[in-house]
Length: 387
Ligand code: BGC
Image 1 (tube, rainbow, N blue to C red):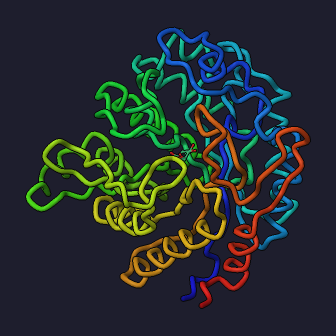
Image 2 (cartoon, rainbow, N blue to C red; image 1 turned 90 degrees about the vertical axis):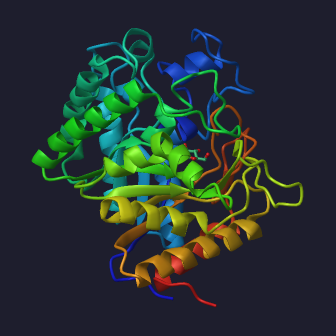
């Protein structure tokens, strides 16, 4: 099973989940009980993986394994810690990250917004306010000068999660059952994306955003219910990706829909550390759904599994890649696969679910690459799946 020449092979991270000390963000305030109306999380992010300082080592490990691309996010809360104040030093920091990727021969994919907001934005504006659209457009303008030689830019990570789970800070990220998308937030996210795409394109970038595809599957007789369930939670965002340069697909598991909505998992179903069903085919299903709805070229921007059993991570990834290959054989334009995640990271409330190709010591931050990193690197070098 081989992939086309130039297919990107990489891994993804998000600033708040790996950098550490993102103290001017809404999530940090939430972790320390300082965000109004938000539920407590089980542990704070703290120093995370200290990738804010250790990113050159992290990127080098990724490159040395054989991967060709690194997706990471800029942290708006660091770049604009107070409304209207832009930190040049932080812009320089992210520019150095891009330089480091380039020097290592990696193709950077840069995300502008990955769940966290500056605390001022959350408190004074928020995605429910139409002013959010302008604020995000301005942020895009602010970072444009450091993106000179970055081609692939992801405006907003998983807007469907922002409009569902993140919209109400009482919702837990890895719980079951997804609330419907908030229509006002959805509208603002789509507008913010469109303005951001226009700005990025005027500077020659290839812009898109990344969607969490949920693989809603109707039980017999509940096919229409599954369609209805998916509309505000996924389809509206896939549809808004029509005409973009690319769309990012992020798939982990499926959700079966029956008479009472999502069907609880049977006790004998294999689950991951996030409690999700082990279901590698979710990626192929997400790719097919997106292609049918928008015909936009696809990058897999996240896919992986939270597990302490790294051999199972390899099985999962192989299964997912077989699905990518089947979709491509049917003519679907998939251009890259970026695994979630490069590092074990802060899983929005807890460090327990480990998604990383690389582990690290909580005291010393020493990196411990797992066999799955070498395995995926080999796939990348061969540009194909061996037997
Ligand atoms: C998010 C990541 C998250 C991952 C696993 C995606 O929804 O973009 O931030 O860690 O899934 O839960």
